[in-house]
Amino acid sequence: MSSEISPKAEVSPKAKIGDGCKIFPFVYIEDDVVIGDNCIIFPFVSILKGTRMGNGNKVHQGSVLAALPQDFNFVGEKSELIIGDNNIIRENVVVNRATHRGCKTVIGSNNFFMEGAHISHDTVVGDGCVFGYGAKIAGDCVIGSGAILSSNVVEKANTRVGEYAVVQAGTTFSKDVPPYIIAGGAPVEYHGVNTSVCRAKGFDEKVLKHIANAYRLLFHGQTSVFDACIQIDQQVPDSTEIRNIVNFVRGTEAGIISKYASSG
Image (cartoon, rainbow, N blue to C red; front, side, top):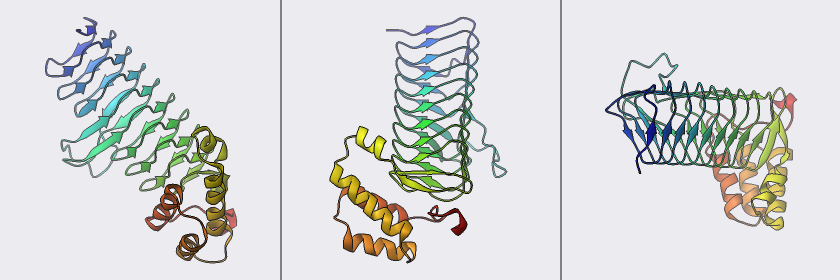
């Protein structure tokens, strides 16, 4: 099945377009672009070189994919933006490709990017995430699957958000947000376990209690973060989720957010 490409779209003959796509008027697609099957590209979208898009994606008006990195280290090297399947990219979303040769910005599958979201160079986004209106994600960040970054969130460079975490609207943060929690405020702080989303994803109630116990040790204890991880290992029944928490915290380079704003 061939694709429907408007004669008013500017599509490079070197771009590879899959089957069943619909490309509206005034779309701009450069060389070195690959688009999978059954994608819909609405008017005034720019898909620039280095884009590798999977199947079933919808890209709405005014969005720019594989925009040049806004990074002072960028010197024009060839790099990529990898996009999975079934993502919804609403109006005026910008996603930068990576800064250096051979590197990638990565967007997984089944994500929803609301109007005005921006994903910067070399950031890696998992599956099933939601980015609210105007959410701004800086370069070299990692967003775990199922995370929700609400409207006007600003995530600073080289930080991470764990899977199924929620960052509340208007929050700016420069430290890692661990999995399965709610974070927000100015400065950002821990606001409890994200039980509603975890339950919706089928988490066992016992596991949710274990997650709450782990974070009680981490955020309410009088020990260091790394000593708290030892206590979690010793006191909390093991599970995939508890391993994810401990491994995430032990792997931090930026540090993790605090329980109390006064503690930084």
